[in-house]
Every structure is written in C-alpha cells, then in structure tokens.
Image 1 (cartoon, rainbow, N blue to C red):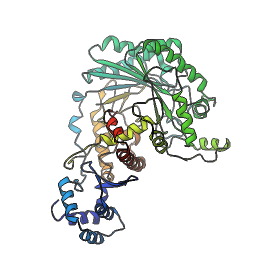
Image 2 (image 1 turned 90 degrees about the vertical axis):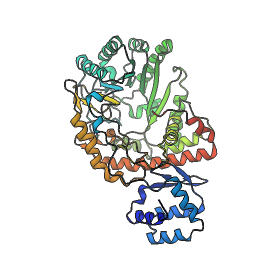
Image 3 (image 1 turned 180 degrees about the vertical axis):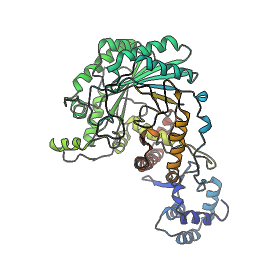
Image 4 (image 1 turned 30 degrees about the vertical axis):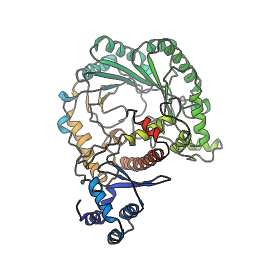
Length: 508
C-alpha cells in the first residue's frame, strides 16, 4: 500500500471486508494483531491499538475511523510499518489452490490404507458416532470384510504407494471381532510388500484381547495400537458400556494388562490411549482422569495418552438425563479443558511428557501457532482449509469394498472401489468443486482461513458438503485459534524457553 493506505482501509471497512484481514487478541500483558495474509503477529503499542481497534470495530463508522487516523501523532510511523511489513493487504479469496490436475491414478502416492474390518462392535458407547440417533455416520452393522476384498485394496494401494513407506490401519466397529482377517492382511503384507517400510495400527476397546492375540501383535514390527479407554472405573463405566448397559472397565483393564505384558517382552509396539472427555467438565473430573493414566505403572515405555471431546452432536440427551438422576446438577462446563490444561502446565515442564491428558492439548495448541504459515508478502493462494487431496495421503476401504476419503468420512460420497479403482471424477465433483463452490463465500470473509484445519470428515454427509455443519465448525475453529494465539503469546512473554522446546516438535 502507498500513501493512500487510509483510503484503502476505509474502503475495506465500508465493504465489510476488513474482518478478513486479521484478528486482534490480548494476553494479560499486551495486545496483538494476527495478520491473515502474512501470518505475522504484531505487538501493538498504544497508538496502533487505537487505530486497529477502531478499524475492526463495526460500530465505528468509516468516516470516524478516518478522523481518528488523522489525529494520531505518529501515524506516519504506523503507515510506514504497515507498508514495510505488507500487512492488511491480503488479496481477496476468489478460488482455492488448483488441485484438479493432481487428481489422477498415475499421480497417487498413497501413504496409508485404512481397512474397515467390521461394522460391528461388542460395545455401545453412549457417545459413539455409529449410534442410531447420530445422523452424521452409518449405524452399527454385522458386516465384515473378507480377505479377498482387503487384499485387493492392499494390492491397489501398494501399486499407488508412497515409494518409501506405507501404513496399513485396521478400523471398525471393534477390529478384533474380525481378528483373523487382520492377521491375514498383516502376514500377507509383511511377506509380499518387501520393498517398502511397512507400519501397522488399529484401534481397540481391549475387551476382546486374549493372550494369544497379544502374543501375535507384540511380535509385529512397527505396530501402534490406539486404546479406547476413558479413565478410571467409575468414569469408563458411565459411557463405555455393553448393549445391556453393563460397564466395560473390568474387561478392558484385563485386556490392557494382557497386552502390556506381551509388549513389555518384545518391545516392538507403541500404545496410545484415546480418552473421550464427557460432561460434566469439572476440575475434579479432569484431575481424576489425569491421575488414573499417570499412575498406570505397568505400561510399556513411551506409552502416550491423548484426549478429545466427543464429536459435535454425538452425545444424546439421555446421557444428561442420567446425570441428573444421579444427582449431578450441572452437567455442562464448569471449566474449559484448555483452561484446566493451562493451569496444570503453568509450573510443569510438560513438553514431552506423555502419560497425562494435558500435554497433548498444550503441545497441539503451541505447535499449531509456532508452525503456522509465515510469509514476507501476503500469500496469493488459499488452501482447501485443512483438507487433504483425496486418495493421496490416505485411502479408506469399507467392508463392501468401496473406497472413501478416510475412516472419519461417514456416509459421504464414495471415491471408487476395489474392482474399479479410484473414481477421479467423483473426487473432482464432490471434494474439490463442491467444497470450493459452497465454502468460498464464507472463507472469503474469514480471518482464520490460513489457519483453518476443517476437513471433509467433519462436515460431509451422503449428499456431499453440509454447510450448516461446516458453519458450526467455523465458529468453533475461530474461537479455538484465538485461544491458542493468546496462550502461545502468554507463554512467549512468561516462559520463552517452552516455545524453544515446542519448535522441535513435528506437527502430526
């Protein structure tokens, strides 16, 4: 921008485009501005605070903003800084980064195949996305994949693989229901896919774990197992239940001990807990869950704990009714998980610690900000939010042999099958053109467009992109990134050595 910078800013304000240019946020010590185009964060002095606050305040009329601009004593310095740093001038969003030419079978370099072993599960967890009341995904079923179908998918992905490495993941339902096919797939892959580094993973609720299964799994090289366990017995048994309502803790804990014993002998396998945090959200409850995992002293070295909230809309009203019957009056949120985690991390050098439910959250928040895109000049392109290119990073095969974008995509349109291969036109229609056409107007007015990690899996149904669902995620995403920006810069002010440690962590 040249000397007429104020006129351009006034024009942006008049056209209500200014909100896409960046975001003002605060710590206890300072005010900052995140610039959308460059990704830069500027520490605001008193004068620049006044200017930017008025610029982004919808209640300040354009002419009043211009009057304020002309009244600031050091406005020339502010003008020169804006010009020199190339901020507040990111180009309009008219399209996403062109990807159509990259969508072709010959270009595929798939890194991960996810095989749906079964649509069935022996549990009926109250927050599960496969429950009948949750419309965002399929229901449970008794369908199992056979080895012939799974082998076709393995051979296809091997022929279209990343040349250095290939991950094969097993999914359900509960994958151990169809353990024999899992075993066939692993044995076949190890025996035949010899010129690529293979790794394996799957998710389990542990209730079907036996000594024979654990012994087999513990010998597999480069295997990681995601363990669905929510905490101590009273918390696990509130939601992770059998179809008759019986809690699953006893069987899950027994399975965990069997598996850990085998892994401790061979030391091949990585264990990762995934705890779903359910209401009521209280400090006492978070502390109780955290203490449970921290005190599991028989686990293999480098076992990790991750936690997450349940998917939007996946918790039925009946769960809250049960809480009230148990005398839990406040079934909402007394304390935000991030707020609790920050309190835990104030005096704790948490970086790298794995057996708790706060390190992962804090590291994610900090690394997302630390490793955001940064440019000297505004970017002249925009990504498809946080979406991957379908078929490139991962490919999901369902029990009936249909290919989907990933394991979290639910009832969204298929992108091929094991007999015909990838359907390039379906990818272009549903996952490129439709996503861009429907999203572009919203994205064009969003300050967080270059931070956004919303992907197909969270907002697609059988008809394609559901913009009502996506807009809910947009609000949640913007709020989350404001919180993360604030936390990162608070830590930068108070404990900059933590930021130095965070810079060494790779983003997942």
